[in-house]
Length: 285
Image (cartoon, rainbow, N blue to C red; front, top):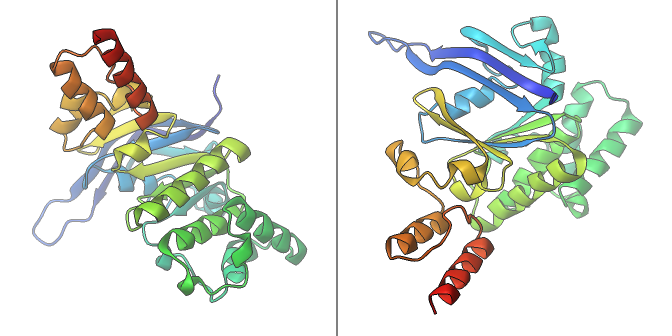
């Protein structure tokens, strides 16, 4: 049986109503389990509930209905809050909101210091975390001199230094240029693959979701699809009906199928797509 790190059971949450309005239901009975060591992408348009879901994963928000457990710990138990946040670290959209020091190494050390980690071990954790995100050469740099992608990698290093079992990235590439997005995605893939850290990536980018082991699609506060990228991302009509695009590769392959070419629609990467097209052209020749 798979080892579950985060479990949600019938999770419900509403934001307080503005005067004269009814409360806004953001989550409506979501039941979901995240396996330890997995890489899960949570997709959804704005207002689908995906960021609200993310904030329940380390008790930034607490359930108004249902339950959330992190490593078997109930997030509503105040005595367990620190331990829950040790296990699950959050990386938010704007890295400037997470950077708290004027020197990179001090920023990465901030979390372990607050956890009471001994000084010698903090030094070791900071060095290891910066190496893990490929920023070891920037140890004495001022964070405000860095690019957006570099800042986000420093924010991730600050989480890694607290040695979490899981990192949740809440639209963490949304403010970055393509180069910065690539840096961050390569970093989290490597952390998942080499260190076994569970990754939950909240996104609306299909190409990012395609990198995950599993895709959960949110709509109207509910999890409406759940499967591998190959199972979910080619479902073009269903995804478009809830306001999401499909990968450009899938769109191209659907178009070719309509034109009579025998191509699969689940060739998600550019390389796979190109190979499928070449094979189909050869078969027609």
